[in-house]
Every structure is written in C-alpha cells, then in structure tokens.
Length: 143
Image 1 (cartoon, one colour):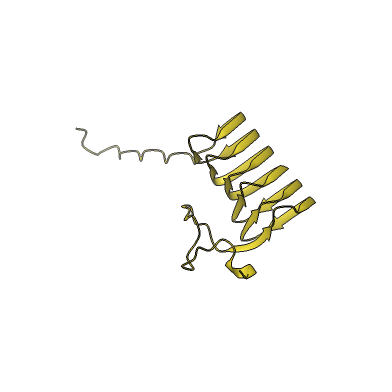
Image 2: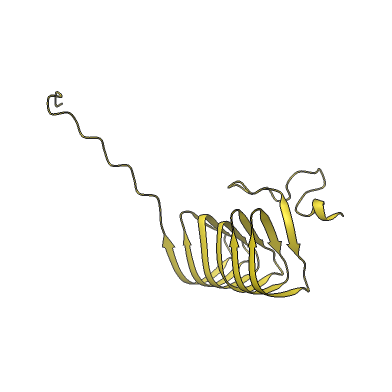
C-alpha cells in the first residue's frame, strides 16, 4: 500500500467514513514509532504510535487503536480510538470510539462518545452563542 493510500478503503474511498469534514490522510505515524516534541499540520494526520508533546492542526487528528498520546491537542476535529492523556481541544468536534481511553480535559462544540469508550476528566462544551431575537419595531402590531 502506498503512503497516499493510508486511510483509504479498498474501493479508494475513505476508510471508516467519518462525518465532520475529514479530508484525505496526509501523514501517518505508524505503530512502533515514538515521537516527542511539537507537531503542527494543516490536513489530516493519523497517529498509531507513541507521541508526547504538543499537537496543533487546522483540520483533523486521528488517534488509531494502538496510538498512545500524552499531549496538549488543538485541532478542528479529534477522532480517538486509542489512548490520550492531556488537554484536548476540538474546535468543531471530538469523537471517542468504543476503544478510546481518555484521561484529561476535553473542550469542544460537539462530542460523540461510543458505548465502550472510557473517559476520566472534565468536559467543557462551548457552543456558539445563539443569535439574539430581533426586536420588533415600536409600531409593529402585537399578537
């Protein structure tokens, strides 16, 4: 399988179709790999190895089942099937699959938790403020 094919199913489409605008996989840290430091990227990255440090993304971070991360994470979408310790900020959405094990803080607008996922920590949901109702003009008839 070529690098450009990671994250794609046999038919060439996205593997395990995810909602929320997950784009094609552009980088992959494989199982058995260890990385420490700062990781910053614009597209979708999948981590199946070990990572420690800081992760920032303009799109999607996928933590595979064998992934083990101790980090501060900031991304639009965070999809977790492995283990994560730290602060997770998913500005659009955080998804915890049934094999996820998370210990820390999650900040997100939308949270999806599958049956079987383990989460210990704190969740802060920050929805966009609702639009205030428009005021009626003074001379408008009241009903």
